[in-house]
Length: 99
Image 1 (cartoon, rainbow, N blue to C red):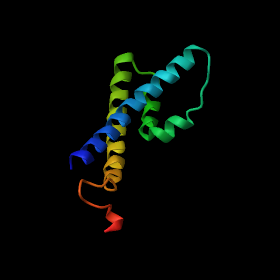
Image 2: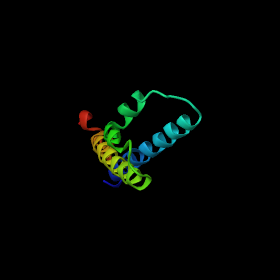
Image 3: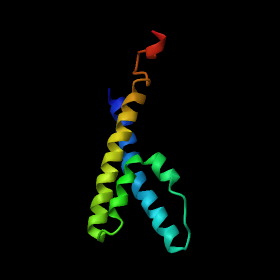
């Protein structure tokens, strides 16, 4: 059971940190004059579509918005982690499909 919780926690952590890293990437690219495609952002962070409403927001509101986007992405990734953890065998047990 502990191993499964670790997997879910790891997926949730990645889901929370990933939007912040992508936000940093797009902010730096914009400062350097680049225009990177947002396709990758929509696939790995589907809740980032909510950032369209943050276009004219203040810095504080934008950060709070990205906090909520990160939390919703963490929930989405933790669901995927919970589904993946079903296939991780526990000690002394075989895989679910090999019983």
